[in-house]
Structure formats: structure tokens, C-alpha cells
Image (tube, rainbow, N blue to C red):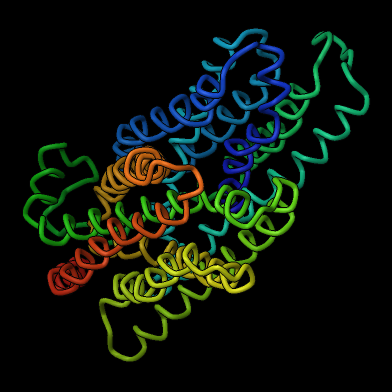
Length: 424
């Protein structure tokens, strides 16, 4: 159920990319204004609201938070299809971000109580499959709906009136989440909270207590969140511009890139997430207690040289092969990163710590990833066709410090794990 909800959440946030042109024509807005709908309107509220939602999830029923949140964001996703002005659509996207902010902190905490500690990397990996699957479905399902809607033109619906093609895409893709949200309330079981600190009498720790705990383990949390945030910046910055790279450098058009890179990213992402969880389990079985964090370090060992070489080689087939390997290893630690954080955090504050983690990684990844590549292209290399150099340099500037931080974090992470074992 949690994986299905994550799939739907990614579908709802991504499908707007398919209706940009008709939306621009109807509202007479610029590329920048459209980018705010998929960027600022969603990401800022999604990231910031996640912090109070995380605190709520540490104190109240996670089942109700997820069920009500999923129903709410799906309603807002459908309301995007009823917007008559740009301002209305912007507000609906804000509502989508607020609703989706309820899912991840509560889900991370919920899963930690469903499974024994040794199975958490695989459990989180299964849920994180929602990202590549949801993004792929957005293009497949959303594209099919958009093609149908464009073929029939404006549709007159009872009560709603005239619905344009891009509006129909939002209306239809938002509906499954409403049913899933209600279904979640009926089927998700609220488990007993495990891994509570022995000194805690209940699950109502103050914000000061949470902050003091994190501060006392700054060497662990600082290196983990810092390294993983830079990794997110590397991942999202690269994936935001790789299609443009193939168009500018290798002469592909948008349709060719979509057919080539869409399935590659989806399949590579799914395979990478699952392979990472199995690699983590293999390391743990061989006496590596820091296996979740070590998995992230190992992934960067391979991702960094691929990220530097892929845009610089001149042969198209070799470049595509390196990008395929890169996508696999960029997604390799997605599930294990979540497990690494949960395993060292007491139950009373797991959702709150997760929310802060998501806030920082989203700001770094969504906010700075793509922009860092653009700044290098515009102001360092000064030519659009130098996008290949920008991708290679961004990899070195961002991914190498990420690798250094995560490597430095291995020792304090093992100490935090030992303390967490005593609570459990």
C-alpha cells in the first residue's frame, strides 16, 4: 500500500511535464512561470511542511496521517484540472505539495515498526521503487490520456462544463489516489512503536529533546545528511540535464530521447534500488554493521567516474552505456540511505528526523542540482554546447565531497548503531 501511494504521488507531481505547451498557450505564461508550478509551488511547501508533519507522525496515528494526506493531495491533483487561471493552478500545486508532505516521514516511521532491523534496507527499497515506477507511469499513462484528449478536443462534462485536454490529464490521474487514500485507512495497521529510548516515558519528546539528541551525534547526522544531500544534488542535477546533453551533443530530438532514455531510466532505477538493498544485506551478512551507509559509499565509487566520463566521450554508444551504468548506481543506495537514518534514530523522533533529512535533500537536490549545471554552462563555459563539460565538472565538484563526507561518517555511524542496538 505504501509503495502504491508513493507511485501515485510521483505520478501526480510529474505528469505536469506532459502538458506544458497547451497549459502555456491557454494561460499565456512563460517558461519561468510554468517552472514555478513544478518547482517552487510543489517542492518548497512539500519540503517545509514535512517537518511539522514529521512531528505529528511521531505523536499521533501514522495510518490516519497517511490516509487523510493521500486523499487530500489526490483531490488537489484533480483540482489542478479545474483551474481557470494561473493563480488557481499555482494554489492547487501548493496544495498537492502540502498533501504529499504527509506521506514520507510517516511511512518511514511506520516501516521501521513493521520489519526487524535486518530487513529494513529491503523494505525501504521496495517502497522507494515508487519513484522510478511513478515517473515512468506519468509518461506512459499521462501521455496516453493527453493524446486521447488532444484528439477529441474540448470535452463537455456534466457539472464541470468544458474541459480542455491538459485539464483532463490532471482530472484522471488524480482520481486513483483518492481511492487509495481511503483504502489505506481501512487496510494499513498501526503497529506498536519499537526501538523507543529507555529513558522516554511516551512518544511526546519535545523539539528541544530532538535537537539535543541530534546535536549530541552531530558527527553521525552531519556527515550522513551532508553527504546524502550532496549525492541528491549530483543525482537530480545530472538527470535534469542528461536529455538536453543527448540533444545538444549527439543530435537526438526530444522524441528520440524520450523513447531511448525513458525506459532506460525506469528499468535502471528499479534494478538499481533493488540491487542496492541486496548488496547491503550481503555486506551485513559478512559482518559489516555499517552496511547501509557503506552501500552509499560503494555506489559513489562507480557513479563518479561514470558521471565524469559519460558526457566527455565522443562515441554515442559508449556514452549511452556509461549513462545506463550511472543511473543504476545513482539509485543503488536509495532504499539503504533511508534505512541508515532510521536504524540510528529512536522511534520517538524518526519521522521528525526524516522530515528534516527530506527538507535538506530536497532543497539541495531539487533547488540546487539542476541550477548548478546551468550556472556552469552559462557563466563558466559560456556556451550551450558545453553542457558536457558542465556535467563532468559538476560531478567532480559535488560528488567527490559527498563521497568524502560519507566515508568520514562510517566510524561515528558504527558508534551510533551500537547505541541504537542498546535501545532496541
